[in-house]
Image 1: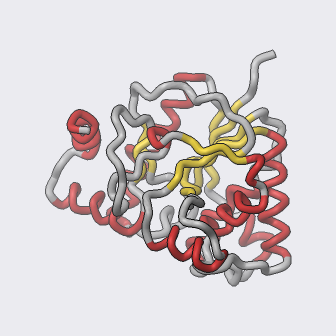
Image 2 (image 1 turned 90 degrees about the horizontal axis):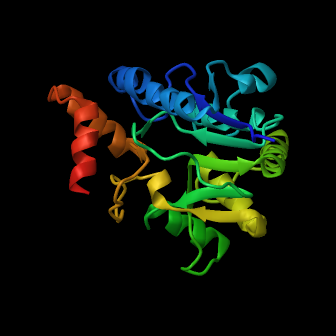
Length: 242
């Protein structure tokens, strides 16, 4: 029996936590289409969420730090499904045309973030050893059972207003889930969520998914446009030198 894969992205309202109207244009014209093309190439089902289930059910945006961060949380309403595997990808991720098919997925899989402020805060508030990683939620792979467990965990926290320690973000909450369910977690190699603009990032040879994560990533998107540099050309050239 052939396994069924679902790839989820979100594009609600402003479309990104950190960007502006200038940032959103290439996200909608280049990045999201690159993910759709990837799905077509390998036969994965795809859904773009453009309406807020959170807003319909809970009205006020009072759970996470900012209104836009609630839109990142939307994914968890859609992890309850009949697919064998559910994959979430931020809308500021570009997938290269030569990207390989998804790796074998078991449990929950994310890429470790380079050492930075978020990892420091996470370890401090939870009294953790330096060896404990902090993982980026922008690319998340789950098998069916783990996707349902993660969805129930997140929505239960929402209903009970159980915010995360440290930063009040969905990313910090995901890392708390990993901490509590470490036997279900497997670290994903960095080519599946390459974040070269984060401080202390290591170079990755031949990445599959390129992530313009955070404020700096969005600033770079805007600078490329201001300088009239073709973003896809930039991404291909960046890949060559890495």
